[in-house]
Image 1 (spheres, one colour):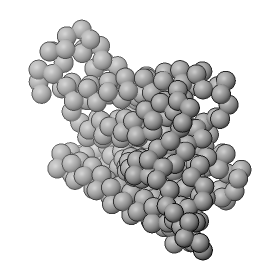
Image 2 (cartoon, rainbow, N blue to C red):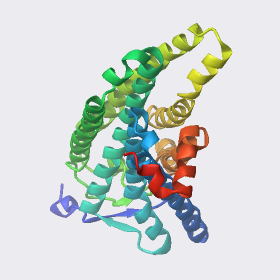
Image 3 (cartoon, rainbow, N blue to C red):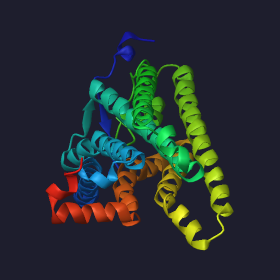
Image 4 (cartoon, rainbow, N blue to C red):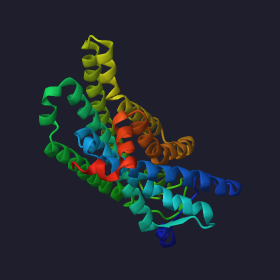
Length: 315
């Protein structure tokens, strides 16, 4: 190969959600609204679960970290995306692209295992209520969250390093609105077998183990609920995990649809639209899911609005 063809790219061009000039400003305002709601909702959850004395339980500890992850996921993607709607040259530096991919992977992997951890929490609360504060003690909660972040960071570094170990020496145009693994693999002019294997093995493994925890937990939860004789008891038991079940269904359904499809030009276009949903829309929806269907969160919000000092005085 000629030496000029081995010249490494120093920046990438992001096509964005759409390359139609007439849609850039309308899309800017749409995604600005989405990001604004995401920030407000997740910061609200973080604040409520931090200051309200009645939300100092393992369930809300995990919910706080889910909100942190959702906030991080959106913030890695949205600001650069919004800027690119307003500029003609939609570029991102080589190292900026690597950093964005790494950050995105940290938060998306973290979300898969945080949701799995929350499912296990609900399993213990419903199936083993007498052992709940022992099995899910503050020390265990901190350990589970720390392991989630550590594993996410390690995996993100491994995957992003493998992707950026490839050569990019022909096209630098990414058919996406952020730096993701699939479009970057499609751009490489070197052998992609090993990076591609690492990327899809990692995605498949993370999905398999996290969804196994979720399905096992909810299988036992359903069995436990069916053993409850009173309809009121079953309703109360189900209400404690209904919000989480909804969030899990939306999140894992989107990931399965995205990652378990063959790579092709069609899947690259589908990948872009699916990515909008789980990087920007789901982080916006989660605070709504966990607040609108959760009496404790709604009551905490009322206490905070009525008397901010009273809400936290018992902490």
